[in-house]
Image: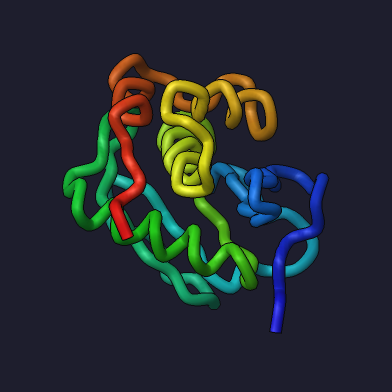
Length: 146
């Protein structure tokens, strides 16, 4: 069964494969419409419980993930699930950490690392991946070998 987002809706990024992922800031109310099936939350502290499956990656505001292996595993899970499920990626503001994670998902989907931030800025949010170290993290991010 496929339960993906509707293309063109608020915060929905379409990856080259056609996978749809919604990015958002938790500071704002959840958008109207269907709820996520899976949420990936990028925060310095454990998020409040939600009514859908979720995963937390410890990631402080304006920083980088605390655990690269856990982050890669979480991003791979989100990317796989986005093929048939409504996946949401969110941080507090929906720009820096969310944009960085979305750029990494774009790399997993085949976008070259050197182009991933520009791809997300063009198709999700202009200010995505806010800091120089977040952009460097994306530039060095690689899809694991199968």
